Length: 473
Image 1 (cartoon, rainbow, N blue to C red):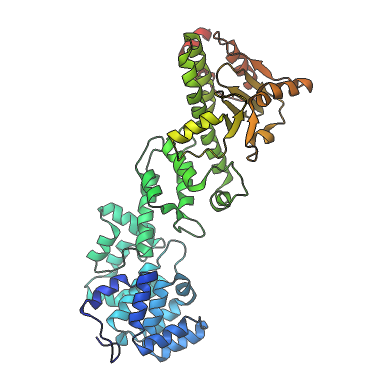
Image 2 (image 1 turned 120 degrees about the vertical axis):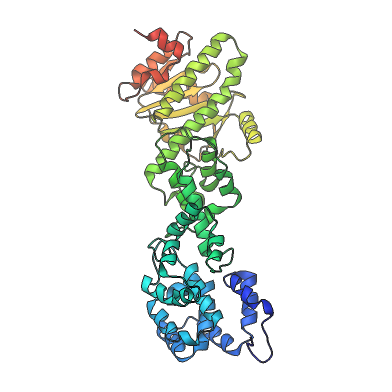
């Protein structure tokens, strides 16, 4: 097939159709090939200058040779497609349907498929039927087959993805089986594969680990465009956080969200927060903060478990009791906010054990090499709990929350957050409940008594089996 007197397209010309939508280097190569035609180069230059819609329509009316460069640009540039490709233009193009080359027709059809999306339909179903009429005729197919693929659905990507899952075939294979050729990296195929992944994600139990979390990170899928102004990562975050109200989700999913969006508590002015958390509903952000609090409780307990097991049996019993109190409150969604205060030695250890662990919100605790502190907000109550032999302190009147939770606070001394704060509130007649973790468990019952004044919770979930039997009436 001659494009001009000097250039002849090679024998593999039809296979080139598969790659019409490739961008960057491949698109540039195709452009060089097509520019061998004087008419293609002429109209390509004109259309690239973004003429008025009326002027572009006049070019299409007057010269059939203008349709191929128009389709080429529309196929490669979604903004150009959105600006010019509408029902009126479809009518103009297919008034000349008997003059369209096979290459031009297939490129137009590819352009329409590649720009299908679930947000808004650029052209009507009637215009789509006009585009696909020649395809149906050549392949002895009726409109019902394309209906099955979802091309005429209001949400074509969702419909096609569901169809792929139903018959258990990958999208490209299904299209090839129907003699529809799209490049492997086409927008439509990519969005379909993403929708299939999201559909699978919606069926998972997030209390369990799944390889899908690793796949999302490895393939960097979360940065892809999704719907409206959203990215895929926004939808992933919503799916995970809307799945259930429990804070007890597997650490791999917590790590996935942190890898995508970072810790929302770090700074609401950061680029990461603006990009990822600003579009997310506040209810879901608060839910994730609760999940992070639960995760931090587990980290805190890990930090003190070694000490508990290395001491006498009395200390071991104390550890189990402290553990049950914190986890019991967290599982019941009573902990609204939290923050860890860890010494440099522990921070270094955690980073070595898990380099991907987001510790940006952890405050560096100074003055004690091994001791750890956790702050918890529970309704109007505030608990400061420590590892080793640190007392548990419960404040009912507390105005230091903003200071402790401020992401700009990077360092704090052990004495200031423990005895320092306690002394300050004593001096201001706002005495906290300050208790040693005696093995007899009376400390816990006093904590439960204060918390139960303004919070509803199941007491038995805060007690060990031994404590339940001991305090049972």
